[in-house]
Length: 481
Ligand SMILES: Cc1ncc(COP(=O)(O)O)c(C=O)c1O
Image 1 (cartoon, rainbow, N blue to C red):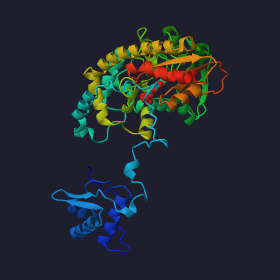
Image 2 (image 1 turned 180 degrees about the vertical axis):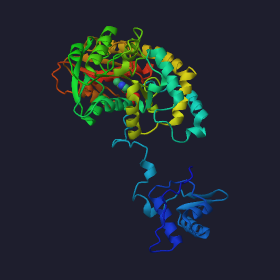
Image 3 (image 1 turned 120 degrees about the vertical axis):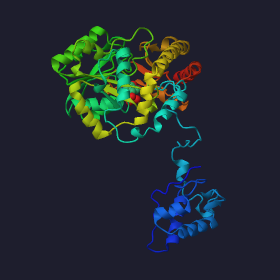
Image 4 (image 1 turned 30 degrees about the vertical axis):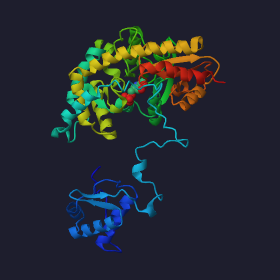
């Protein structure tokens, strides 16, 4: 039961008395579903004050609404939208409250397709997150008055300091808090990075296949996309980068998305040198580097460049979406000192500052060791899930499917020749309520003549024990004639 906000309630006094106008205005709110059944109306005194009418006017209007069954009076508690709606309004228009916020079932009454379930790539284990602790941290800050007003566009200093320690120790990122900008996920950081460094028509080197969210920014900003092929097991075609005159390179060096390859330290150094020679920008997306199962993670490119005092061309982008949960919508960018003012100008123009309580809670989550604890726990769990994926793939598909991605991150990429198309497999799986992402989703250049097919299977949010059964379900539709 929620109290009703008077909101935009207004009286049309052109044809009638105040009392009647108020009756009609409230009735309209109720029958259109804006004021929902069971909710509490404002007190007569409050409404009179807000609308600048006498209290008697409100009492009369309320009584009329009671007598016609729109609202009811509960002794000592006030007036409530009535359970019973007058018959002649039933079926005329669907109450807004019945539709807003709910995905309708389809024509067969089937539950809506859940984009976070099955083998959805890019979603971490949501069940495993310590939400009780997170709630306590949010509560700790929620009543702090100094967080309620406008804040620094760059983001909370407490959070930036916490991140700078975390990034230095876990990713060898070279920075202090003055070079970190808090963003709405990595997505906003990537957008700001491209906006701050390039203008329409400039060339940007982009991994192909690559992260689709970056294709969208490239198109939006009318940049010229120069695809750099990423080959199975070999990774990014370095020769193409080194020979290029492009203005920037977008790269996921720790775990190329979606091919699952890594750039070696030697390759990273060559790219850093290329950027220096050509005065080009490197945009390093380090989105899931925390989850490497086969070896220790490589030092970030930004960190390597920093050691050589060559990090003035590297923009490092990170996200909390994988190590915490996607809905948090917090990411960050570490930018060279001279680029900070331009990035802040852009951030200010497109969103202004970031939600404050979440930032403060996150700073505590990092400082009190919860983030690292959670990452360690999840690394063990994802390693188990990765192994379970390989076992289930082997059992269901034998030699028919080949895993091409490394043991890292939250997904495996599998390929095959002939047989079902990736699109068909994905659509058939969707009918079973399972996400299977076709490889073509990540290709900017369509119909590039590849003779193999592939899909990306995320395992972050699938319960460990469900992997065999879900794999069987998608194998059945894979082999169906
Ligand atoms: C390559 C890549 N970068 C970054 C992200 C994180 O994006 P965001 O922080 O906007 O959720 C993802 C998430 O799936 C990703 O796949």
